[in-house]
Length: 118
Image 1 (cartoon, helix red, strand yellow):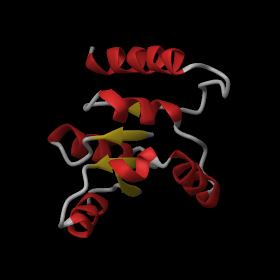
Image 2 (cartoon, one colour):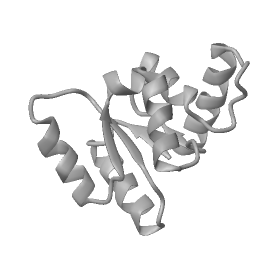
Image 3 (cartoon, helix red, strand yellow):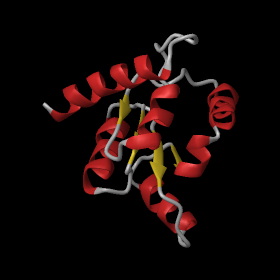
Image 4 (tube, helix red, strand yellow):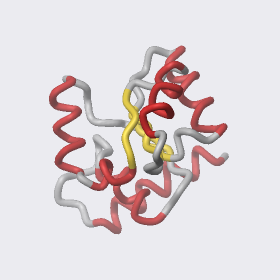
């Protein structure tokens, strides 16, 4: 799974729950001066990978991360930010067809967000 706002209270809870279930998590945070310290904190809570929004926007680089680690592409994306960041998350979802439009991806992502908010 992949989520943004990973250092929020909800994001940290998601990390801990996913870790207890044995799930890998890719956790997106905003860039900051103490990036390494934040990444260490989130990993100590069970995060698998911590990346910045800028790294997420470099989609081919993130896809290579999944290939190198031999993980499946994410089946679930949790969005707490919206906008371009949400679209970048949706691009990585495993079951979004390669040739679908951004509008289709946004609809799928909004559907996931709706279920998360229920």
